[in-house]
Structures are given as structure tokens and as C-alpha cells.
Length: 135
Image (cartoon, rainbow, N blue to C red; front, side, top):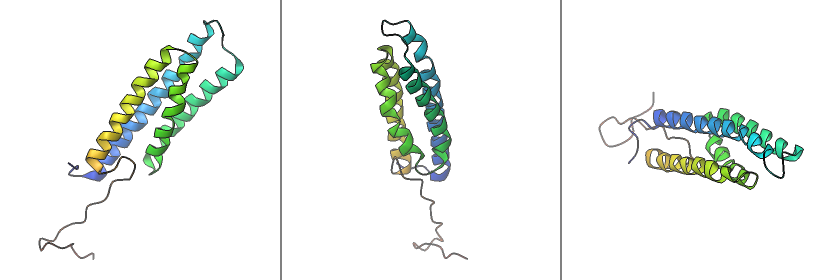
């Protein structure tokens, strides 16, 4: 099944991907508070990693308009999941976000034909079975 208007569906799905990345960045900003109360505490390296990851996730949300945006967002799911090493609760939070991201990729595949390719612009048909001539 493909979308009747793949360009419009692609824009909508890119907006959803951007929203997910912003939410992931915000969720990452809550992690230092939880780590500060643990036995190991909040070190400078942990804080830098978490703040950097949150910043990159939020900046990557702006890349979703570009063709490589979904690929960048997919690659960022790995460091997000690795925040579970810093706080056990993040295995569940990051795991939920990764599952949502995988569902988004599945929907993109169903509606656009590929999870990573930009939507193809349909060629207008003039009714004779061939492509319409371009003016």
C-alpha cells in the first residue's frame, strides 16, 4: 500500500520523526537528575555525554526535512539506547522510543515504499497508458 499523495505523506512523517527526536532529547535531559542520586554520582563525562546527546537529538530534528534526516535519526537511536548503561530506567524509556522509531520506519516503508528514501513524485497520466508529456 502506498499513499495517494506520497509527497504530503513524506512531509507528515518527517514531522512525526522530528517530534520524536525532540521528545527523546527532552527525556535525555531528565537523566542527569536520576544519575546524581545513584552511588556512582554524576561525573563530568556523564553530564557531557547526556547534554551532548540531548543537543544532537534536538538538532537532528531539524534535519528531518533533508533526505538523510531519517538516516541520521536512526543512527542516533543507538547512543540513546546506550544511556541505559548510565541509568537502568533509561533501558525502558529509550527502548520505548526505539520501538516507536522502528514503527515509524515501518509506516514510512508502507506509505512511501522505502523507510529512508524521499518520496517519489508521481508522474501525471494523460490517459493513454504512458506518461504525460512535459510542457
